[in-house]
Image 1 (cartoon, rainbow, N blue to C red):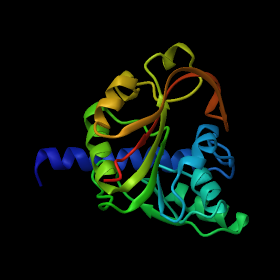
Image 2: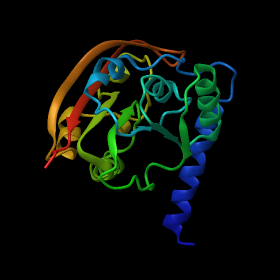
Image 3: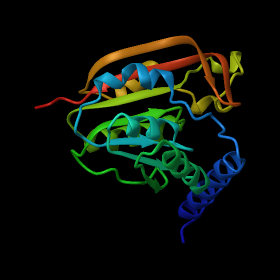
Image 4: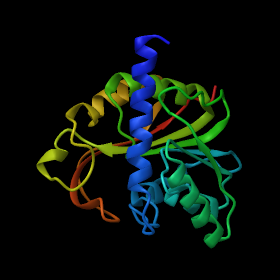
Length: 215
């Protein structure tokens, strides 16, 4: 095994351990209600096509979308979170597909998803750019990409998100990574985020809704 592969697998294992520990309690770490930005944008999601929720953790966004009639797959690195997502789906009386995978390497398909949702998934810029390229290939023509992440000024607020500056998003970078798409919505600023114990107050966020060309 090469050193690079060994180091990558060590990082993946450490990340999975972190998130499995975060989701180990009986409570839902980020609550059971969907992200309110996603709720506000849900009318833009094409009807009748499947939806993929990236890093959906304990399933709050996927379960909400499933309750609105979407065929949803929630993907996450932490099996502990996905088990709780299935429990949440059962309580809500909806069907949710779950898949454990490392999003820095997992292939998402081609021209398949009507929408891909990325809510508070934070990766280094290079890894995020590679993931977004796979997302664009995976979206069906006319499909929609919904993105919200903490921005570069978030450490000033201390209300959630990763402490590492390289994991925080810059609006122009993400738009560049979505080149060729129609940018339906963009926002770079401060809003109140209240999602469980770990997102709690005013926060600097970056939001984008992008639509893949239909032709």
